[in-house]
View 1 (cartoon, rainbow, N blue to C red):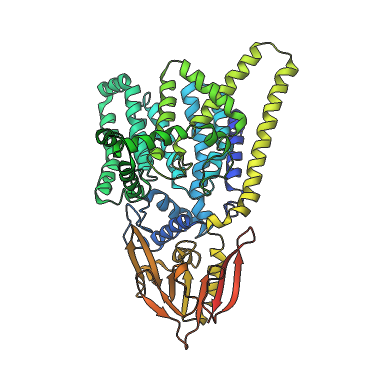
View 2: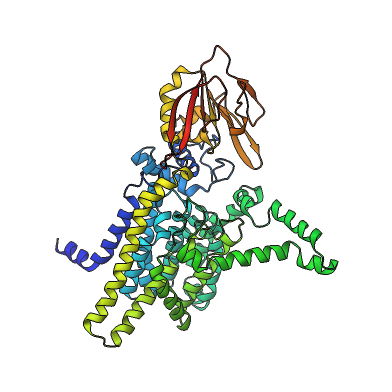
Length: 567
């Protein structure tokens, strides 16, 4: 008991921070975000399918990449989710558990990493505290985001790499965790190799000494990482590994059209026109703009990103009160010498590269740039620690020092309370539509009515309704992928499901208003015959004449989400 007491007494501060991190991430986890989105149910059902049959929803045995909707999801999050589903069952909690747990783990790893770098417990504690409470890390820990798990592996990889300089065996663990990150989230496939190259450059002389003394460890570490890396290239060559990137890349078909339009409309002489309007110039221009925006105060400290599922719109990713201290910390790190400086700066400036390669109004992208965490938190901690030392050195009155500290803590406390309160209340209510809210209740209604109808027709307006049926029912995975009525087809790089069992899935605009015939995307035309009882799940006002409304369900803001009609 004495040993346990001494341990808790020595580490009670980080234990309290971890308890706070766990509370903020697991409190009402199945309540907010307000429902599972289509990516989350895809993770959940594929994990359930692996657990029940050993196959994914396509019937493929233990795949290294999950085809899903045609976006080809990486496997690590899904396989870990199958473990959480084994413990907790198929539920919202089990699907989000992996991300929430990884988020809390990131808090602890930030403590270990910062302490390893600076050997100052106060800075390490502050850094872990900020990772626990800052909106960026907190928000993304509560949804089933592979990126959050990938960040956890990246920090583990960095921690063991630095530790491996002293205890060489840790280099093998570093290679293992870096390798796992490559199979968790696509951005890591760009960021991790770049970060590793920078670390090899920073530690070149030391690694050379390790090679001379213990080359077996270096060789084995290299082989472990290569074991993860080589299949990545295989997937890229097949097109599976770039399926998602091809949809969001700067140089897509739209970009090519824009370049052609620039060339056509330009009044410059032909040689200058070709020099200034081409793929290389266009790419460089867009990439540079995206990259610079990734560090903009508007993105980090005022408005955040523009994607509703990755942060609260109009809310900063980092508390504004910490902005001056992050800048102070950055200034101090740039001034100092040593490998700590090189590690933090290379991590910071490499982190937006993957996100900057993508297009759209959502760039800078909160999720794709998650690898920047925990650097702003560490810089902010360095800024606060050194600011406090400076204030203390001025020999102000005791009351003055602690008045400044109390004011800072008051503002920070209000910021944390305001964010979390807004997240659980206003965000949940105002943005439930962006999380496909209402599918769970709709599926429960359909399950109750299922025996009474020959055909159940569902609008695709809110995205991939078949996956929500599979998850919330839950449907037997083998019965699904072997179902004789299953119709799915590839179009525009996406796999669409038009039918399985007695369910038919139609575009909202293909719901006839004056007839009973429905045309599916696959071209199949069908009708609800006079002798058949049919259900139609649709959006407000979209239904054929003569059908009777029997049920409806609202988003949390009061707007109608689903209406169900029968014939």
